[in-house]
Length: 126
Image 1: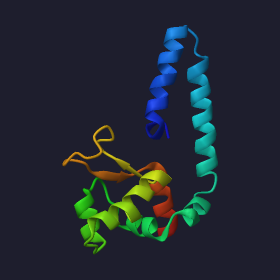
Image 2: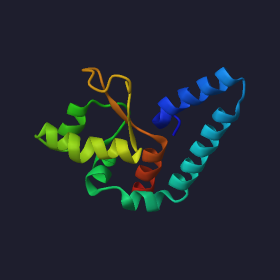
Image 3: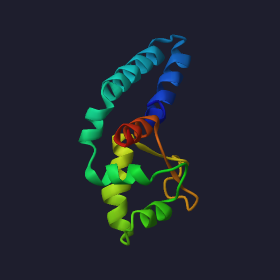
Image 4: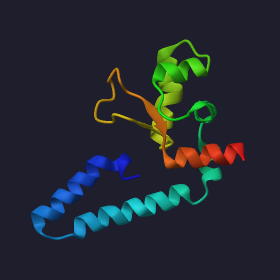
């Protein structure tokens, strides 16, 4: 979750450092913990909210894979549809993450499951 809120993390650290007061950082961490607990409280419930396309994508995710590799594994041809219907929602749901988040358009970009994505995939398989 901290990775998903990386910018806010750095803002909180800088605010704490500048003020010589750990309150901004502690507030950020507590909010992130609360959000994590709310999300992971019942991963099967979260899994039920994840779109059909994203669930299908999770089934094919293994290690770090490029967008092209994932699209081909799913048997899809249209890159724009794949990005909008599969990759973008998976990133928004927090079940998929980029290996190079600060360069989303890098030709070396790959994707991997987040811990939440792994739990949902395990729950669906089990």
